[in-house]
Amino acid sequence: MAEEQEKDYFWFYIGGLILATIVLVLMLKADETKHLASGVVAEQQKETFTKIEKRHTSNNSSAAAIAGK
Image 1 (tube, rainbow, N blue to C red):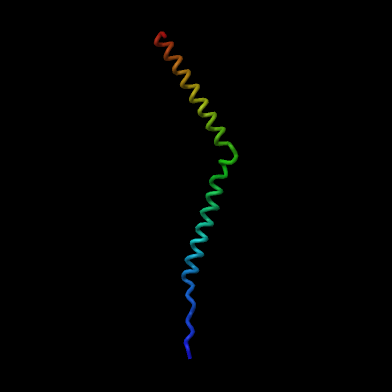
Image 2 (cartoon, one colour):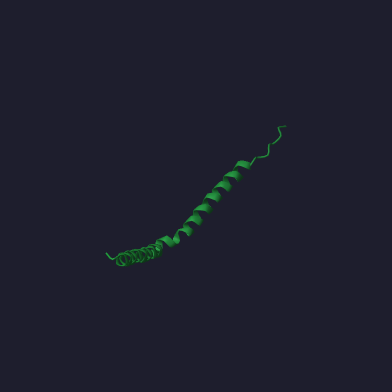
């Protein structure tokens, strides 16, 4: 009588673990970048750069006025 060999499911466990990790990473990445789609970041950047530009122009004009130009 031939002995029955037990099936080895080691590689199925490893494959399942890899698949679960990939799915989890994709889900977390989608959740992390959700705020970019709303346009809030672009609006805040526009506002920030506008304020920076105002500050640069006001600093330049006041510096020119102080220098007597």
